Image (cartoon, rainbow, N blue to C red):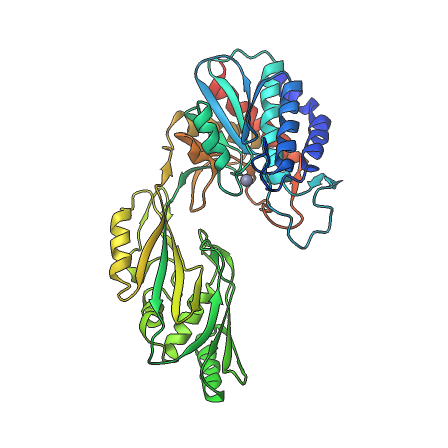
Length: 454
Ligand SMILES: [Zn+2]
């Protein structure tokens, strides 16, 4: 990249750290809506601070009633968008540092939101500043759009799209490098079936709160005594899976321990609900439970549901049963499919229904996939910038998760977690490496030069 721009970026280091500290110190967790603050007053305060940062750098800034703000460089009609967000998820347990202290230690800046997504958003803003200060002529202008509701409902982008013109092309620094150009489609179902009168009787079970989480533990109270507990132990022995049975006055409490995770990334995980289902069937459960044990069980690829499929750009379909609970003699549950770009979602819906006789299926979510071709100007430009600045190999990847990028017609997720780096978004002790942010800043400047200079 241009020496002058590179030197400018290096010169921002201290100011970048100071500014990011100020941003991280605002606990911008979603709160109660107030006039002018649809996501609570801390997110409104954060948005004011971001706008002030942009204005001080000399950008034209706008705010959208506390939902989102934007900052623009250049006046060309055609625009490249950079989409980030200012809200953060709640703190959670296990912090060894003040989650809003923005303490710097060993080159890391600690705090909720430091990596998701204040650090990367601010790195993009400093990249824009370097282009501005270097006086680069632009054939496309650059618009940084920061939302206040990414972690919850994306109302920010809905509002922005309604009140401003969303550029067609751009990237979101809210995931990981090298680049994600493919997001799978989604199908979500609610399941419903009556508890069977015959066979093994389940007295209590209520596992899972969110469809998109692979349950790590599942407990159920079964009608039975020591003999049943012995059969559980024998099944554990036979399968090598982690089951425990405790005989009580009320019956046998069985605990299945799997490996928790996000439903879009089932590799190396094990659903405790799936474990419970195969055990219940082994112990003589009938009806819908037996059907689910056969059609889903421990699978996360939809095979026995007739839904397994894959393609080159997006990989294989994944499936997760995140919730299964018994209430007043009725079972309810969820299925969460992440579908390859080329999958026929109507066919998947029909297959799932056909493989679950006796179970009512209600479609709760249907989202189309998102894909930007790997040979597009956007993807090739960003990957070239990444390779040039980082010296690492660039490649376009697929995700089963959702990123901000799909708000744009031609949008990709681009950074800022580097390959091999700890992924700390939403976890305790979230931090951002300052060296990595300085590198991300160079990558973003390089990318924006490729797309916009001229
Ligand atoms: Zn994020």
